[in-house]
Length: 183
Image 1 (cartoon, rainbow, N blue to C red):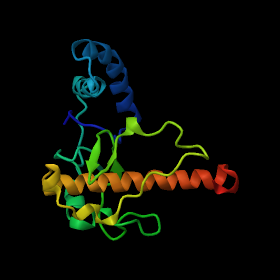
Image 2 (image 1 turned 180 degrees about the vertical axis):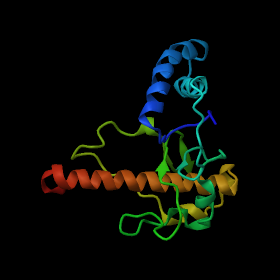
Image 3 (image 1 turned 120 degrees about the vertical axis):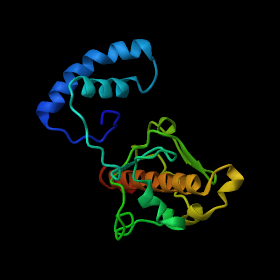
Image 4 (image 1 turned 60 degrees about the vertical axis):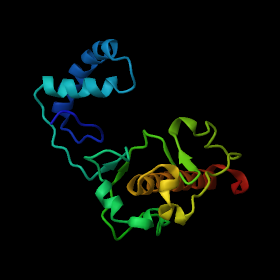
């Protein structure tokens, strides 16, 4: 009930208690574990210390293609359709889907990929190009050639396609408002 990650839906009085303890715990946790997830471990420890267990809903978010406790069963049901383009800006409108894509991992499949730290820093400028739009067929490759199990390949394809298309939509909107002549 304590080893959880975002998104959180928390009452303000509970989050105030957690936040106070969390900020006290982070430096000590980081001292013993000076790595990327130290602040998340400190959050879990703070929630436990405050005796505020969490109810984890496992269908809201996807992130790590090999993790349990995420909304992957809904994505897996799409089979080869994981890269179908959105309909009226909605991904899979007639399917239950996770509502949060937590792109903290790197995703690679079929020569396409996404890693948030490799995204160009000038992406929201009039001169920056759009991200490459992955093909719909990315969801139906022979993933064994890449050393991936079928579910890993499809999940990576889903993340690459969803992230590229969502970012491109944001870039297109930005450029329609800010850039003269829609460059």
